[in-house]
Image 1 (tube, helix red, strand yellow):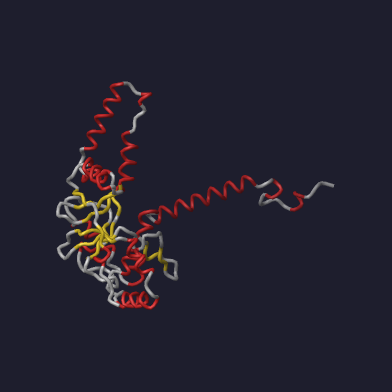
Image 2 (cartoon, rainbow, N blue to C red):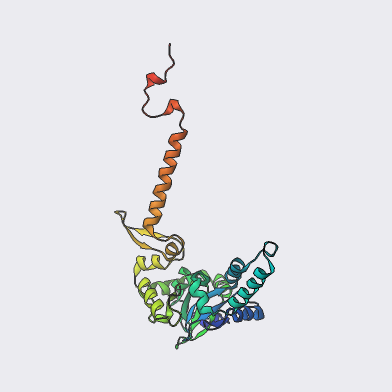
Amino acid sequence: MPIPRLRDFLEPALLVSVDEPLIALLTHCQQVAADGAIALNRQGAPLGRLRMSRVLALLYTDLSVDSAAMDSAAIAQGAINRATMLEISLADLVLDHPSLLQPVTVLPADWDVAEGWHWLHASPPPWVLVNDAGQVLGQVDAIAFWRHFAALPMQAEGHIEAQASADAGALAPPADWQIAVGTVTSIAGLDQSSEQASAALSGSGLVGLVERLPVPMMLWTADGEAIAHSLGWQQQIGDESQVLDAIAAMETAAVAQAEVRLPPSCRLGESAAARSPQM
């Protein structure tokens, strides 16, 4: 049975330029009933996915007003602020609120499933597909993709996994636009983001695999030295030294609290004679 290509699972994706205002994103998503859109830089390369739920939560948090507690002038100023923010460009919005941009995995549409197998397993959707020129064609329909392989006989799926394992040495795709895009650092282009992402993906073997995982994970040597942190660890936990300092502080506080709560008869340093009743 021939191995399907990623483009066989292609579905349309809403695309927006970072030069467009926020109101354009809201309008596009409403027209097509989409929960988000793929943000493109000025060269048409994908930067990440903007989710409507995050954008609306930001608007609600930043622009909500208590009309009962404000005078008419303050309410009018709030309306002006809302109108102004709706006209802000997506580029400025993402620079001020980088967490709005969800990372995406960008893969060539002409790859067969065996070539992209490890990417599809190690990274969550959306999986953006591009042509040879790096232009976005759409995204992988994740439901159709997994439904297709759920219906395959075990022998066929095992053949695909075996072929994918044979190519496991070349984990990183060869071109900069075929990498997992991280947080935007340069809206004008992908040069800076691509360099950082390429550095993050430069590892090979087990270390390289761990660094790509979206779940928090740390790889240790037998001597207890941390040699790799997953993408999920860096995004959800952060700097290791700060985490360890926080854990140590909590442990110290817990020990101190436990010592305070010990009854007098159990305090350290007291002799058995002192605890025994007087005759």
